[in-house]
Image 1 (cartoon, rainbow, N blue to C red):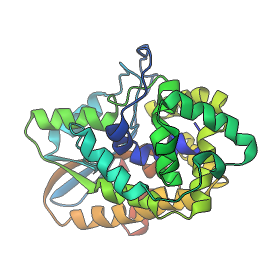
Image 2 (cartoon, one colour):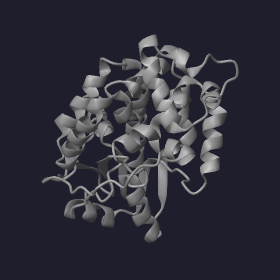
Image 3 (cartoon, rainbow, N blue to C red):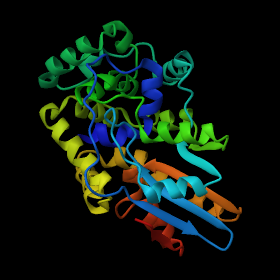
Length: 302
């Protein structure tokens, strides 16, 4: 997938809650390839923290759990995810996105991309069925987010089939608590704080390489399902050359904050299951490597 499809998984849940995925035919069920998603463990004498890398949006019917993951889930007293999103109230999510991402007097959204990209952007807008004046009033980052469900539809993805949502349902059914490392507003403010030129890179990336997105997503999904840390990290390393600022904002700085939180969480007894996007746990700037740099032992369970 392109930069946007990979890195924006961090804020995809709030986007889909706000505007809903574009209509599309039901996706065919796909079964995970041979192998198992990666799972790590951070522990001391009285605390165990399982670290699980996720894919935030999956094809319908995709099987990803295995015995090791189920055992870790069953042992955990609580679930921790990137952010807890209220998917039952789309109006609330939309109000948040509008409050942070709307500014009067902006140039038309089409004028914020190079001339040779405008025809593609216009086609994307038409497929979204969103009014052009509405999008023109949005900041570049938020206008891009509003168009993202169209790309998810192209990939045959159902926004309600992500790993986190399945985990939330399981913990809720058992009455176990769920908390977020961030709030939805904190996630959106990461994008809201980007310089305008980076926001425009973000928008252009959404309309580039459309023909390659499906194959790249399938390759990333296969790497995740077999726990291939190097292959997952490689997709993010490729994106550094596109927008290092966006990668730093969405990945590196957040990883550092989460590593600090996890280290501090070791001071509280118990067992928790922490599930964040797989790209946050792979590569040299990952949460795992940052924890190891703090002198902590992180064990690969599978």
